[in-house]
Length: 253
Image (cartoon, rainbow, N blue to C red; front, side, top):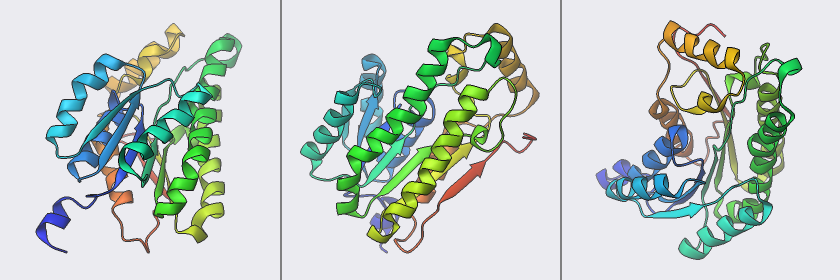
C-alpha cells in the first residue's frame, strides 16, 4: 500500500449517508470524504447540506446533495437511482437518520411512536432493500447506526428501544442473507453522544433527564462514532466487523 492509498483508502468508492446534515451523519460523511470517497449526503435540511457541502469537498471527495425525507418511499428509490446515475456504483450505505423521542409509554404521543418506527426502522429497511442490488454488485458494505438502547431497554425509552432492537436484529438477518455475496454488514451501537438528537423530545421530564445525564458524564463526540464507521469500512475484504458497541468511558449502561 503506497502513501496515497493509505491516506485515502476509500478513493474510487461511493458512499450514501442519511441524516448527513448534523451530528453523526455529518461527521461520518466528512470522514468518508477525507478517506477519498464520493459521498451522497442525504438530509431534509437544504441549508445545512449546502453549508456542509463545501467542507466535504475541501476534504477531498465529491459530494452529491440530496434533500430528501427518507420516510417517503418514492424518495428512497430516487436517492439510490440518483447516486448510481451520478457515479455509476454504490459501495457503502450508512443508515444513520433517526430520531429519539423518549417518553414513558403511558405519556407517549401516538405520532411520536409512529414517527420513530417509520424513520428509525422502516426507512432504514427499505433503503437497504433498494440499495442491495448495487451493493451486491460492488461487494459493498452496509452500516446501520443503532444505539446502546438496542441492547439495553430502559424505562422511558420503550418506543425508541423497540426501533433500535429492530435495527440490530435486521442487521444480523441481512448479514446472513448477503455474506456469501461478499457484502459486509456492520451495526454500530453508540451510547451517549453529544448531538442534537434529544432536542426534539416532546416529554419535558425526559428531556430534562437527558440534559442532566449530559452534565453527569463526558459524552462522546460525533467524530468518535464516525471513526468507528471508518474503521469498519476500511478493513480488508476478508474482515467483516459485524458489531461495534461504543460507550463513553463513564457510562454505566
